[in-house]
Length: 92
View 1: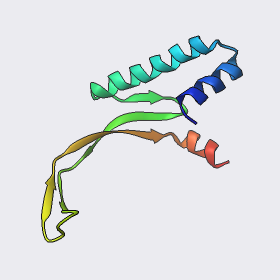
View 2: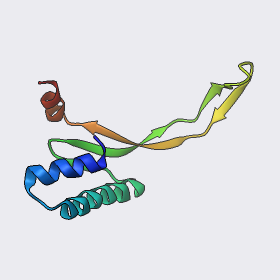
View 3: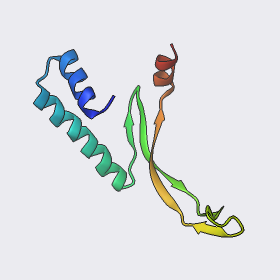
């Protein structure tokens, strides 16, 4: 399901207009993105938590010359941890 499909699904299920639903979804995406940029968590009860995960600096084998190593710097990535309630809903 892509963004357009999600908007259509929400529109039909809740009887909102496509335009309203699109604005709401974009507002949600913008709010979560803004909080993650500020290194804040976004917790949604019964769904999960969006947060920034840190990957430690590490050394990897060079893909073209396997006799050499490359040092990768510390990086940050957006992550999501579902609640146990959400996981149970999916598994059933």
